[in-house]
Length: 80
Image (cartoon, rainbow, N blue to C red):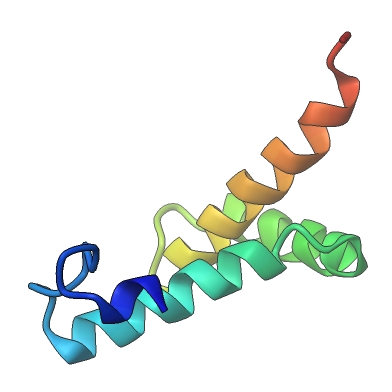
């Protein structure tokens, strides 16, 4: 509801197509923190590591997912 108010919508200047892509990326990154995807993500990371450079746009998304997932896991090892 906050984004419906023009005073608070930080995305108001973004084109609808770009907004949808950004929203889908954010949702995918949030879902990447789910541990049920851990081993699948490991396999994808291994195949990406064997590639010299990302060849598909989706490869970059997979790399972002791994970074977010690793950050989420790494937090558990911190001393509090």
